[in-house]
Length: 196
Image (cartoon, rainbow, N blue to C red; front, side, top):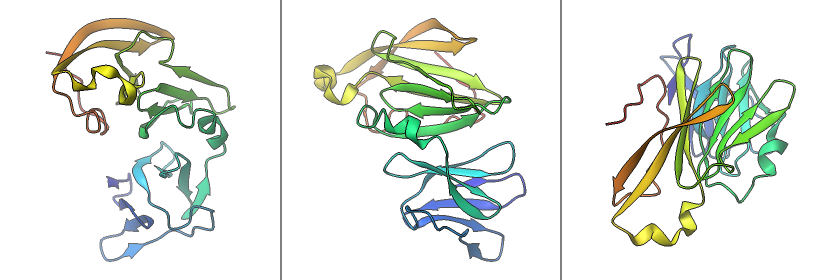
């Protein structure tokens, strides 16, 4: 769920996305191929559009009360099978869309369609984060689902800040008996990232 800049509440449900105006739930017009499919992580962009994802890792947005398919979904398709899910979405001031692809890295897509994937070139395991406007976006890289260390009691993860086209190692974190399916599955939003 997310509250947009106009005060409406948007709910991502297993039947798609809907808006609550204080009196009733309204579903935007949706003529897409994913009509009625489960929706995840609703996020508002600077123009007031609501973005959301589907189980097939495609992204759609609600623009003028109509669901539209994101024109750069084909960029995500090339990484299909290499990441678990899209964890969160953030928007740069220049219109760049940032996607956190769990166990792969951060995908940055500029308005002209040029893109860069940050993560696979870094040493595993690694938690990558960056500031995008007032938001923080982060994810884990490396395929931890097939990692033989899954049964161990603790893992040592490097924390890397991605900023100005460069990565900077911050510190190592030790997770005791991590739950891989919950670790990193929620967005920080405007909360602060703190390393103890």
